[in-house]
Amino acid sequence: PIIAASTYASYGVGSVDDFVTIRDQVTESELSKLQPYNNYLYVYTITGKQLKEWLEWSASAYETILFPKNWSDTTMAELMKETNLKSLIREEWLNDWSSFYIFDGIDYVINPTVEPRYDISGNKISNNERVKSVTYNGKEVTDTMKLIIATNKITKPVAANSGVENQVVYK
View (cartoon, rainbow, N blue to C red):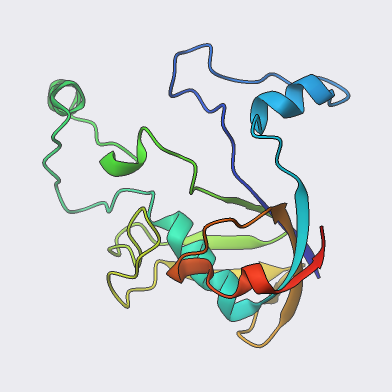
């Protein structure tokens, strides 16, 4: 099985214009806006267990619902109070999405009523499991399953994706 994981530099945090619109064919200019760091594609082997841990880290970006949180950002706190709405994203993730990976080629279910397993830095903070289901082509991804993952170079491995950086098959 071959899957992909990616992070993006343009995701709307800078302004309402901080997005990349891609139509028809993807240009090199559009790609450089998404990944402006002259990053290269790496291909790694990964086990189902490693994939699930990495997914748990990305799932920590989502706010835990059912439990009210006090925000230090007064603008967001006031806006949520006025509208009686909650944020989908945890406060610590709002201005730094560099560790948030989007996984393609698999399907997964995140339970946002469960507190996260990792903090934004990829440090394990609990044994909770937010990711309830991971499948590839409709079949469950088991802990021992071997997959190929295409992503950018892992330069700062953390507890959530530890070991993957040593499993390079192509760079």
